[in-house]
Amino acid sequence: MITPYKHYCYDNGNINFRVGLYSRLSREDEKEHTSESIQNQVEFLEQIILQNGWTLVDKYIDDGISGTTFERPDFKRMISDIEAGRINLVITKDLSRLGRDYIQTGYYLENYFPSKNIRYIAVNDGFDTFEEASSNDFIPFKSVFNDMYAKDISKKVRTALKTKQVAGLYIGNHAPLGYQKDIEQKGHLIPDPVSAAYVRRIFEKYLAGVPMQSISIQLTQEGIPTPSQYAGNCPTQERFIGVWNDKTVRVILKNEVYIGHTVQNKAKKVNYKLDKQVNLPSSQWIKVENTHEPIIPLEDFQAVQALLEKKSHPNKGGTMHLFTGFVFCGHCGTPYSYTNQHQKGKFYLICGTAKRHRKLGLCKTFTVREEILQEHILALLREIAEQYIKPTE
Image (tube, rainbow, N blue to C red; front, side, top):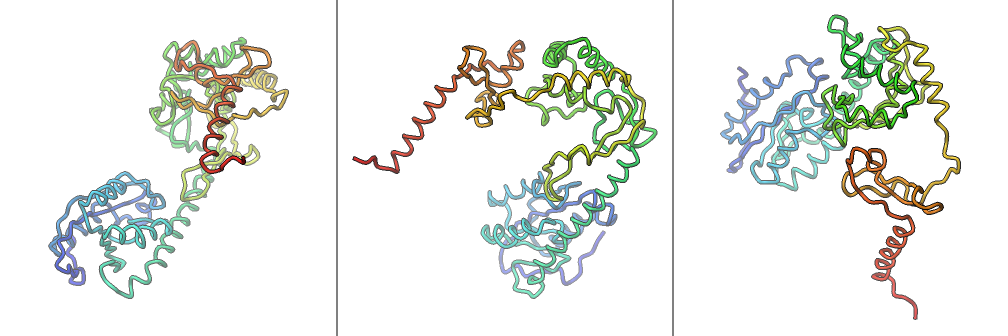
């Protein structure tokens, strides 16, 4: 049990402090500082709260989450309790537990906490917003150092992952449909007896001349689990759980993993603070051949690629319609796409889900003619403009 030292006694100023104890530990922090466990942080802070006679309202713990993001469940819960007036003091073991992004951390220190009359204490950094101390002046620099540490750790992690990719080790969170992770050899894939049959069926049907859209409809109607369903993470991946689409089928048909090759590094994070990724050109992909057992014969895979190449062609007219990318379905949120199947020369917009999965009846939205939508929007724009611009007489 940790016993607080005398200098951990704080001036309360006759205020009844209601404390929110916040602790955080990322996987990278755990590797670098094995003693910096969540339990140690909590016990350390509980002793200080007890010694100072404060009231511990709640403990907020984010375990395994990086300090470069503030999208943390318990941190957000703590902010909600601040807004509700439940707590008026936030305490952490040190500033890096609050966050490692110096911009966002600075926002909470300089703007948010003061505006909400929240006292913040970072014990090991000697930082206390309730006091005017020289140590407080150094905190902005401390935040920058914490940010630099996070950047350095991110760089080391990326280097380690790239080394594994070059060695042909599979580093994805989930094995591709058709495979499972080898529990006896880390980074190695082995065929999954159940889902491998789904993959073979997709290739067989496409080679037999069945269109991708028809394949996706058949798989959906038969209740075959989608790749994200099979991996167990479908709620955040799919708009319609259990529904296949031609894009998913195409990704499978083009994936060289099924002929025994491991192809990785197809995308990268924008930076170490954001989860957003951008796709990389094929010249930067890391491909290692013959790393695992194939489930599709090479000649079948090559035949499929030839068919895909033959059927992929650019829009002959190269036309970009006025509302492309701006109209979305009010029922399912899918972008509307254009069709001219009703009247020659007349273009209509239709929900992408309703268009691709008409037989499944997932979204029963009506088509709208481009001209009518254009007239409606122009009328709305005139109405808005008339509120600010008086027509000339």
